[in-house]
Image 1 (spheres, rainbow, N blue to C red):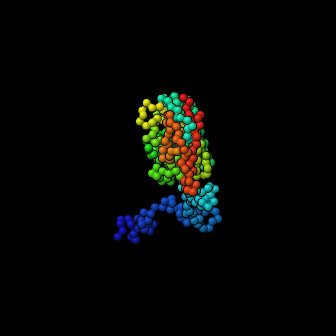
Image 2 (image 1 turned 135 degrees about the horizontal axis):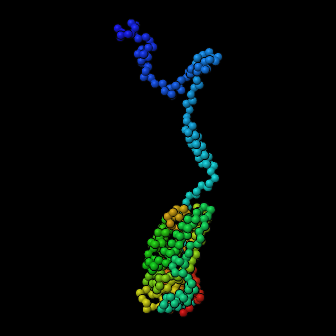
Length: 356
């Protein structure tokens, strides 16, 4: 039965509590309304000549949002540009790093014409020699103003010059190298491709223009001479140039003047001066610049006073105060031994010695 006041047939269709109750949970939000394909004309529109009561709405465009579309376009442009540049880019492809060449070296002893002059005071010798105006130590090799090249920056040029100077200082001015027999201070600055040649030069010295320790370092025979003054006089220069897109070259030219005396003589023996002229050529690829190492390409050394008759391959054996050169020329040269270097010897000019 129906409730009190209800029609006998029950609640009429469309009345509250009727069949529409099952649709009360449906929510017609704004997005649902916008998505409808049919739209009823407004009352004003129905007053016109429109016969139908509804109209069909155009289908909604469900494409990508504008931001996503722009992003897709940018990715496509970037990808296309990368392909184009990979095929037709204007830059030069870096060349593979070439192995370092072996060091070529020449050591020329300079023989004095007379007795080697000496004095009790090493400073007195310096003041009366051509080295009177030289600077002391590394100050005598100033770094030039660095200018970038076509393929190397200012900092890379400075790195090449600094490493070249460091090698010169460690191999020409470090006391433990000069008379103590050490090699490591200079070795750590040598390009890894040249380390085998470096080590073989000290393990098996040879007068072949490739394996002479005195071509790598300034080293005196410790059994013969020691430093009388650690203030070594120096005058030198450095110059950097680019030889190709992957290589810098540094040319070094320096004169080093040492005060020496006989080993173990103390202050009693007179001191004498010994002069070394070194011309070195360094090369640096990008790995060398990053690792602070250098390829030493050529080493040209003139040193004296020395006796041409003595071996100057392993050590420099200076003639000291009051000594004269032994009779005889340099070691013989075999013209049939094509793998050996030509023995050379020069004469030390009188003007290169101090006037005491």
